[in-house]
Amino acid sequence: MKIFKSLAFVAVAGFLASCSVTSPLTATNNAMSGKVGKATNNCLSAAPLTRLANGELMPISGGWCFNDKKYDIYNAAMNGGITKVATVDLKITNYLFFQKYELIVTGE
Image (tube, rainbow, N blue to C red; front, side, top):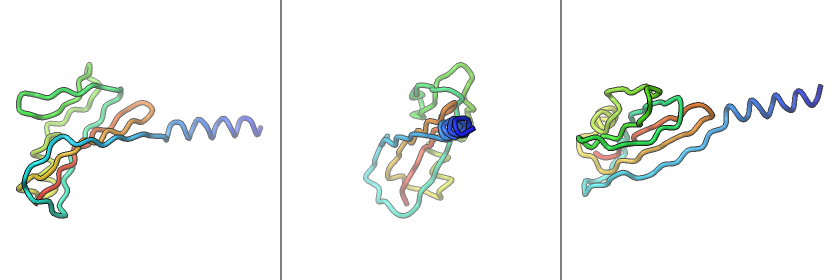
C-alpha cells in the first residue's frame, strides 16, 4: 500500500510540475514605472512561435492553441493602463500537457 501511495504522489507531483522561462522581446527609451500589463494564451501542446507582419508573436500549431485576438502587445498595455511602452517580455510556462504564453508589458 505504501508503494501505491508513493507512486500516486509522484504522479500528482508530475502533473502539477511546471517550468517557466522569461525572455525579453523589446525595449524602448520610454521611462519605466510601476505599471504592468499582461496578455495570456494557452496551448495544449508545445508550439513554436512566429512573428506576424504586424509584429505580434503567435504560437503556431494545428489548432491546438486557444488563440485570442486580445493576445498582443497593444492589449497587454491596455490591460495595465499603459500609454507608453518601456519593455515587453515573453514568459512561457510549460506544464505536462499544455503551455501558457504570457506577454508582460511595462511602462507609464
